[in-house]
Image (cartoon, rainbow, N blue to C red; front, side, top):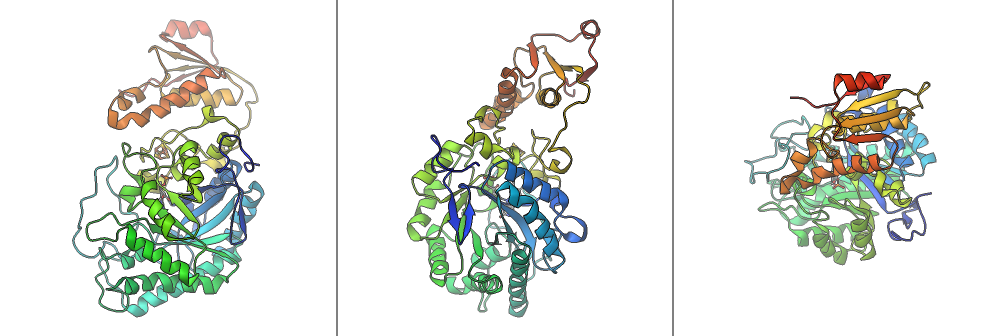
Length: 475
Ligand SMILES: Cc1cc2nc3c(=O)[nH]c(=O)nc-3n(C[C@H](O)[C@H](O)[C@H](O)COP(=O)(O)O)c2cc1C
Ligand code: SF4
């Protein structure tokens, strides 16, 4: 069910209706792209469908498919012909029985690299900033070309609707085409699309008009915007509030999904505070009656519940939270927080590895098609795992869940291995969440962990196991 009155998180599990689409709860997974989303012909892959279905089973209310491009020539999902309609249909048909609503996000990468010299140095973070697209370089497209692109968004939105998905969203945050047009940091045009805010907003409005005309009034259209540019010379929160008010007056969108500034900021490196931008979002809340979704390290149910209860946001976006654990929402609903793999915000295997996205401590992520339904072992075996670091503990957990009898031997006095060395830095404390997850799993008794136990060859032979997994790390 994952919906309805909840003693601890009443707001989080309250349903919400967006232009006729019922979301079973207030938990959304915002657009996020992985290379393996793209199947043959640039169309959505079976792996993507399985990934969404798993998050549907896991209880979230909404999944937004990131980065569908309405013009050819990019290496994201290509929504450029009606060939995509049956692929969307396959996703809708597979996801609907799980109860999750699915939107598609339309995005044009813009014209890379961004015009002009870089104006800021990205703040330090765990991973170097990566260019996520091979767009054409340093070009200021003529107005006619822009208008053709905006019309292509209309065609693409129609395909989303005809494919049976529940809504469509325009990507206008970070630093892609619509953000490049909106923000004076990048927009140095001197035509109808540059200069005043009204002009810089024109591209966004014309695109949303094309999308709205294509899908009609009775289909969800949303927009993803930054709360503020957070760049020198960029737009501040007040100007973004003006944008929201203008969009609300025009009646073009059913919701706005606000992120906290550019990717460097809305992801943020590990030490940044959780829910960091909620204070800023209060300004937008006061400026508009549009339903607000917000993403930005809302990593605990308590934090999301508070933001919803205070009315700052209407829908809590918890994206990496569900990259790390597809069943986060259901586990919260059922009070099984011990079983949650809490995201560490390390970015190492997701945003830092976009083309092969997975999670640094959840091997299922990205492999749902093959592994989400692990069958019980036909012949349970006696397995010894040597080493209680993340690899050993994950092997033990998986083997035990399949019905094998597992013992982990660890010579140290606690589970977690090298994770603790990483977590010793005050700036890297969230690494500890990995070790803590395995500690909690070990305490459940599904398998045995012997601490302070040295695995000598004699001891292993004497135990007569069927299999030994050596997970003592690399040197
Ligand atoms: C692997 C990855 C890919 C992403 N791709 C997109 C994208 O295609 N479109 C988008 O709007 N945001 C994208 N994002 C940003 C997320 O939607 C979200 O704003 C971000 O993860 C912060 O929210 P969180 O703290 O809940 O994870 C991506 C994030 C990740 C981790
Ligand atoms: S790789 Fe790191 S940041 Fe990404 S989902 Fe996993 S724990 Fe979170």
